[in-house]
Image 1 (cartoon, rainbow, N blue to C red):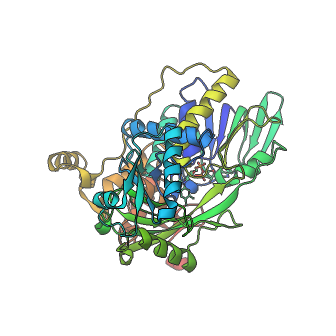
Image 2 (image 1 turned 90 degrees about the horizontal axis):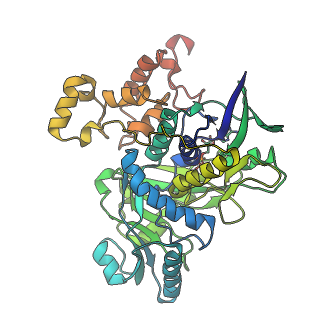
Image 3 (image 1 turned 60 degrees about the vertical axis):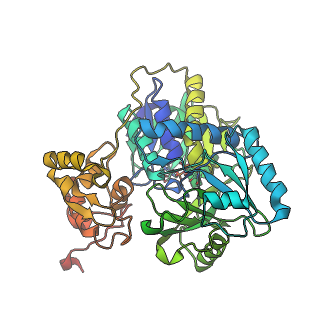
Length: 479
Ligand SMILES: Cc1cc2nc3c(=O)[nH]c(=O)nc-3n(C[C@H](O)[C@H](O)[C@H](O)COP(=O)(O)OP(=O)(O)OC[C@H]3O[C@@H](n4cnc5c(N)ncnc54)[C@H](O)[C@@H]3O)c2cc1C
């Protein structure tokens, strides 16, 4: 079936969702096509969750400009869109006297990029801030403007707010072909052909394949895997700031950081791999992370690990984000090679891309745009009186389903019922953290399946973990 829109965004990760939200600030009809069953199903779901201050990218690059602007936007957007964020600061550790000039160069780079409040600390000053740091630290770069953010929370907030402002999302809609037509493009999925004036290619690891459908300019995206170890909340206060290592004689280094939800995390590794779907974790990856993390924090409590995971960076060849129209494909806007700091930069990438598209299409401002959104209330974080009032009006908020993260039945039901609501266990997990705690969904999965089945009006054996084919239960008479 044919459908018409002004703009089609391919990919509902953090960048596609941020672009879609910014596009709804203009009088443009917008559709978002996503091959998976939910938003935030690609790289945006597995990363460090750092809102980088911006001292790392090369001055003058798009990455530098959009990182600093993105970090600034997140500091206000998290309140407007109600997603978890905390400005916890970051330290980049230097372990050898001979590496001090590199630390100074990083400081100067940050200053040129416009990062505020940067400071070089001595080893003693760094340890005064973070007592768990190693005695081997001789100096550190301190960036108080660095923060930690919930990558799911931010992506879902952008997407929900885009949908509330009129963007249409199509899930399980893999783009198979994009073809130039007289007045725009025809974008084909198995169910529809979308006729549009402009296309945004925010397909993450697959952006090179989408680009090649319309342009002969070279664009390669290589999956670069990063593995992580996540530890229990009980040890989440081992450090307060995000602890990076200065690239030096021990290699690129790994980070030790609290997450915005109070866990402790170490990683990532960095390995170029051939397979765009290979998110396995490996013995070698885990061993490397452990060893490097102990250099920064010798007592890092790795025995409190609750899970491991990996994410795939969409690594490009230019060292910078690939944004805008290729010369041979006007109206086709790349948002490609968005590796770190892509999460931080996403709001700024959205702002920049939407402005370019408004210019290209001649769209006017949408005066009805409503930029605020309220997240799902979390009973465990409420003051007792507020909690009692909520439970009085919604008794399902008083029944806890996930005991590790204290997630109530009401939260799970609301995760399913709201705009772009969850359709799978992973969708519920990313919205309300059911199954994210110490038992890693060992105890609460049956409860969550029952609620999903009831809310979606399907039998329990049709409830999936994520994409079709990932059902967890089978009927006894079918075994
Ligand atoms: C290990 C690691 C650590 C990182 N740490 C940080 C960090 O701390 N801070 C930071 O700022 N950044 C970090 N990043 C980078 C950040 O995670 C990414 O830049 C960002 O998530 C990219 O978002 P995206 O929307 O471009 O891609 P994705 O999230 O991958 O979204 C692309 C979407 O397109 C969909 N898609 C693909 N092909 C098609 C198709 N044919 N049709 C329809 N849909 C399609 C995919 O299913 C996917 O949902 C890290 C990345 C990694 C891997």
